[in-house]
Amino acid sequence: AQSVTQLGSHVSVSEGALVLLRCNYSSSVPPYLFWYVQYPNQGLQLLLKYTSAATLVKGINGFEAEFKKSETSFHLTKPSAHMSDAAEYFCAVSATGGGNKLTFGTGTQLKVEL
Amino acid sequence: DAGITQSPRHKVTETGTPVTLRCHQTENHRYMYWYRQDPGHGLRLIHYSYGVKDTDKGEVSDGYSVSRSKTEDFLLTLESATSSQTSVYFCAISEGGEQETQYFGPGTRLLVL
Image (cartoon, rainbow over all chains, first blue to last red; front, side, top):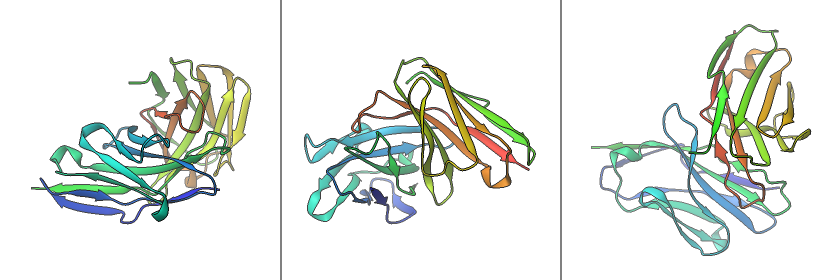
């Protein structure tokens, strides 16, 4: 079985500051990891995903995430926050033999302040 | 954007009534999923389908049934709606494979009074 823990249900940053959203996973087999973003009243949109090709993954809108097996982490970062980054972010995991199913974390609401 | 539509987008119903939500895709993807989203729980898988007439249960399947008679349509039915089923429901599709991206529809907001 796989699971995901997102630390911090709400994160607030100033515009221009570093964004760091934390995700730790648990999986008995090598995982595939995803970050999705949800803007108000919309569906989820893929930001980036790790599929074992490279540990540092770059996504859309300047976001990136690094897979660290030793720490079982896949934290999402962006060097400089923009007001348009305000949204809810979800980390998710799937794994070989997992039946093509995603397990989601509980989400982190990102607020960007002037 | 992936061609996924959900209907209705909003629905208010009363406890005990049946409700059917529809997901329609134009991508010809093999896999289709139904999730519910609730504050503090993220998204939880209700049921999914890996082909026409092939479905399986997810994490929170009690009180829900699904059907898929065509590749493009995946129906979620609440046989007798309860207030605990008030939620936002999302459909997703993928080509299959654990590393494949799931693409999400716009969601259906359901209120059970």
